[in-house]
Image (tube, rainbow, N blue to C red):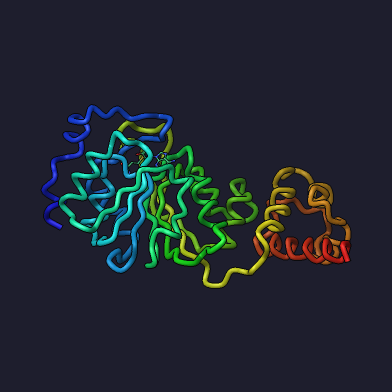
Length: 285
Ligand code: SAM
């Protein structure tokens, strides 16, 4: 899209609008066209999906998404100061960009389009994890969600991708393993951002798991919260917080009870959630 390539450089736009980055909004902007282009292309073919970008800021990644072929792009931004910069982009890509000025935590992304949805975003760090868990626990997941290509702080990316037995393995890892197939694509140095954050960032791609077990979310959360809430304790102790009879639970799951949360696979957590459901049922019968 030649119109987008002809827009003034982002630094000029920012200077013109007198935009200073706000820490409380997690504002660390990307100006490097090679990098934003790489992120946009890593989301694959953008032309047959609705692309949703959370937190476009002045629009560096937004421009790259259009140049990578997005024809139906929805941007959700909380900061009204960047609106003129986003409107300038929308003006050179007629009909391709919809700007929603809102808190992304309050938006039901799945209802924004009838087409498959690809979310691509350099997420604001302060709300990145609640946004991700909100999408993965959406009642319609996977529904229209096609893929999520997201920038996180590296420490969060490591938790998302962690395997059992590692220090980073926790509730977020188990939820992501249950609902998605995920992989870390590449790291991004603090120097790539303006202003630079304190830590390295990583791009992670998550696509809905082809088959995810239909376990009630409430039970899954009760079990993982109990187990990881006291991650140093043995399961025999930590699982008491589920309120279910622990010895029966462990016996049914084939566990000794001396294991700790970080040793269990996502499948074993799902087994435990199902068992808690059955035990609660039999106690209320
Ligand atoms: N996409 C731009 C880039 O890569 O240069 C900016 C990324 S910056 C890390 C995060 C953006 O998210 C900021 O523009 C910020 O104003 C916006 N933001 C912060 N909290 C938000 C929220 N709750 N809902 C929507 N946007 C938010």
